[in-house]
Length: 254
Image 1 (cartoon, rainbow, N blue to C red):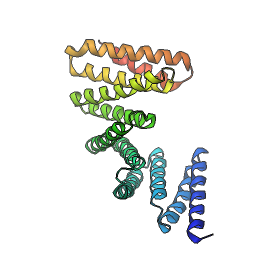
Image 2 (cartoon, rainbow, N blue to C red):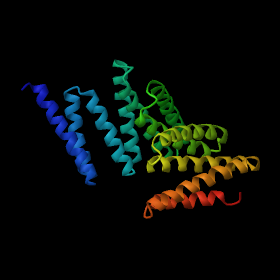
Image 3 (cartoon, rainbow, N blue to C red):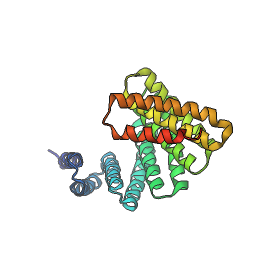
């Protein structure tokens, strides 16, 4: 067996070990495994593996609320992802990598209170997923990530009082979720995502002013109807309960 094949096998083993440690909640051990995997990836020039390692490490650090370290890691991931795209610009997997990383960076920057940079990251992710969905409109993974990014982007815009932009972005998210739900009407995940986007849009319209109150009420009532139906299916789901409470609060005063 050649030395390069041995290195690749060792690298694969290190990555799988890190993933297993993440699933067990052993985040520090996972980070140690990823450090070793990164060294192996760099020494064997495994750019794809290096991107995945950096992306995974960024997620762990973000979950641990080590925001500065997570941001630095995501920036490295974007640099590596850019290298991959330079070599193969039409590769949809590489574009997907970049879109996901940028979306996660937006979430991270939003958590750090850096709204302008968060908005920039969300917008870049949106551009990538719009292109991907033109190329492959039936790809459920692309639609899911695109919708999540748009929902988070729209929420940020509403929180910064950019209501017109927020309305446009949230309507785009709703369109994506509605298409997914039309294809799989029993999918509880799609129902939850659509109800969240409707609630966000209703709140955005409410903030614009009294002239949009009826539209806001319509969206919020639809969101609440969907969320209550979801709770009947999953009566112990705390996230759904929280979503219902939030939507009801938004309906107050309308």
